[in-house]
Image 1 (cartoon, rainbow, N blue to C red):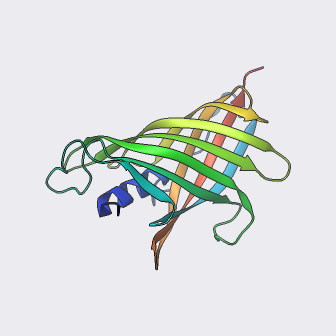
Image 2: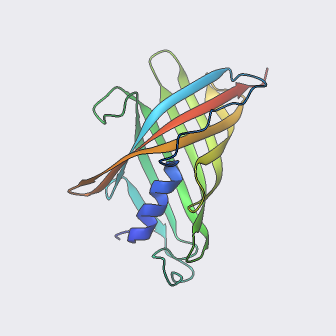
Length: 182
């Protein structure tokens, strides 16, 4: 089942931040135990699947119906190029929880599988993304391995969008401020 065009755009915005300069991951106060940075390579048209159809049709001016759910897996790299060192992948779901002609809000749950060769583990993150407001920030709500008992936040920003034969490759940059409970 092909995803509606706006849903792909909406997911792109969830996983990205903006063309505006990204926020500093932390403002004074306690510095994170780890600052994880990565590029997310989001190949739409290949690595996502519509799981639940919309409960309500799209509002005029949108292509995404309320309640549509998508599951996805995207690759994380060390550099902007999709051919650079792979650091892991992000798996998750996004559900349209509100949509108007002005914006669409998705509830997002992701598991970040990270392995840079020195640090390995997973981070759980979740939050709502409102497509009319940038940049995006998700709460880190737990982790495993090197990230056991993690909490924090993850802020991203848009880098590029490139048409491909199968859809669009959207690249975003993330900075995850990870704190560990002792």
